[in-house]
Length: 81
Image 1 (cartoon, rainbow, N blue to C red):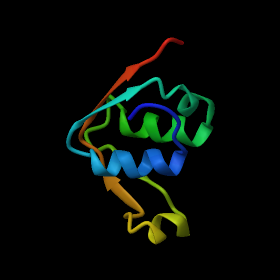
Image 2 (cartoon, rainbow, N blue to C red; image 1 turned 90 degrees about the horizontal axis):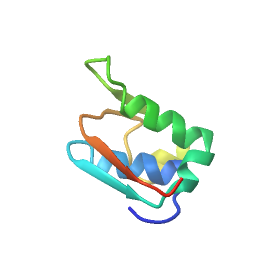
Image 3 (cartoon, rainbow, N blue to C red; image 1 turned 60 degrees about the horizontal axis):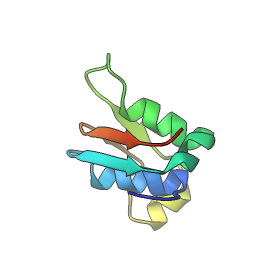
């Protein structure tokens, strides 16, 4: 992903790439939104064997996303910050 994304968009992207390596290139706006930061913290926990993240809202259901899932992928951040 390159550019801007919302927290819900990040949740969808993490779900789609839940077993892969996701590259976030110049998506610095994600670090300014607390919901995005919390999703990344949950997805990238280093001490927990199960990394389950969730989005408990009607908007996830409307996008045919599960309300929670286990994330086993990894994330590479490319940023100028």
